[in-house]
Image: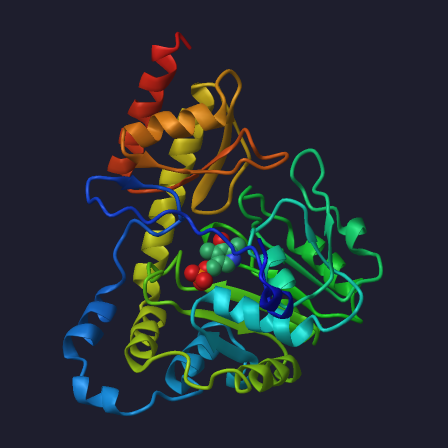
Length: 356
Ligand SMILES: *Cc1c(COP(=O)(O)O)cnc(C)c1O
């Protein structure tokens, strides 16, 4: 029963992150982490870090890391915003930019944190259905709104939209802020960062968690017009000034500087992803043409739930949602080649045990 005081508090149904199992013998393909280690520069930063520096508060602007990102993405430092993972960046962006009484628009199938942030901040929202091929229809975003947010490639489908589609959505929404969540853009997509020159209401959000192997360090960033970033900083500095700690700032800088390692790791993952897609389609799976570091697959004869549970018994963790439209799909992170071989072997076994 609800207590009287609970009528006066903020209640919300939280986001459920993928499970982080304790065992070391588990093949973990459920949270889209990178299977390869961070670059050597990160290792060196941690080894040489002076613990005495932790007496002091960190740089509130993460200046060195911000400058490096500005150079890498060919924008001004004042166009870059840093946060503790892109979840932090997105959460602050919802708080800063979605303050209208009109609904914020996002796809019906998308990152399941968006409706949670909308709920916790009491932001009205409306979902726009993806078409039958899980594609975003830009016409759905030509209605009155208090903001727009979508990932590209989308999650958990992995479907990438062309830059023209992104631009069509941005150009038809000049009276609100449009956020493009590019968590997976490095795995084969074309970033919309160059569009921020033309559209001062466009915010691009990216993360170090997937393509730069730093999910545990918590580094996310946004790129937008100086005006937009100023508003985002005003909200950030009204909530918590000292978000990213000193060690993390130094690790992030080392990661941005090693462009060669970054592109090597990304291309390895892309090669494994395409091999996995082919192997799964031969086994009777239907797949989207994922351009992320995961595949999104549905078997013609066996339910996603049953495959999920059978893989779990074999200590292979993948992601499954009991939700409309995607309840028969599995989202499987692209691991190392060895992990991928074990996954394929396990799936063959599961199917053959059922005579499939
Ligand atoms: C993983 C993910 C994020 C958040 O990643 P962080 O680890 O918080 O940087 C944001 N958006 C999407 C679509 C994601 O898949």
